[in-house]
Amino acid sequence: MISRAQFFVLTKLDSDGLSALKRRNQLPVVNAVDRDYSPFEAFAYLIAERLVVSPDGHGMNRSMAAEIVRDAASIIARRAPDIEASAPAFRYDDGSGDLFAGRLHVATEQFSRSVPFVGTKAELAEALAGAGTVFGINVTNVTASFVLLQRRAAGEGIDISGMWPDPASLPTAEDRVQRIAANWRAAVGKTNKDRGLGEE
Image (cartoon, rainbow, N blue to C red; front, side, top):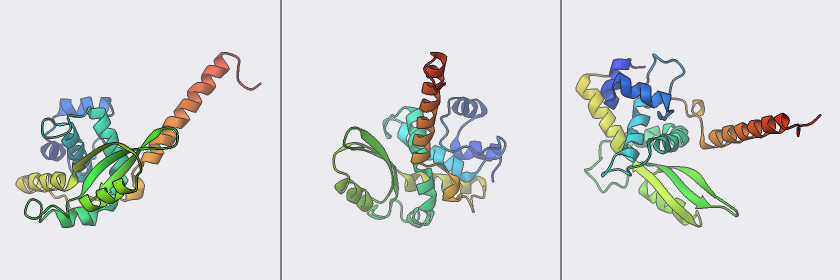
């Protein structure tokens, strides 16, 4: 774990900025204990920030960026060895080993759905080839975010070893969909009950 001050160094956030992001649910990964921070939380924030910033990034809404990274977080943690392996060659080779993360918006029979993605350029091409109709792609280079995290940590002597959480401890996109569906069912059930339409 890292201190709050170290988290600020890694993310370039300040106390007010962090409070605003928490209040708006715009942090991709948050520990249950408010005073505990992890390098992975800082890393997830940096990935989301790359989706937000403009003109170099997507200029995306911050809530959307946090949701995209949140949905992919367990896959990002699972791909930790590949991300670490890609860092030394970042910007010194053809980029074929760089890892990207985000989401694909693909068609289904009736609707579209968002599919989290984490992988190399070749894996992205493979995913696109097998996805059918693709409405949109939002990905960013997570190797670049990891290198930035490493440089900031090294510059301030912050230990980020052991930063990778158990992927199973992180929520998935399916968890989010199920939570939204449960909230909708609860709201509909309450409305029906209020209107006298519920089961007797």
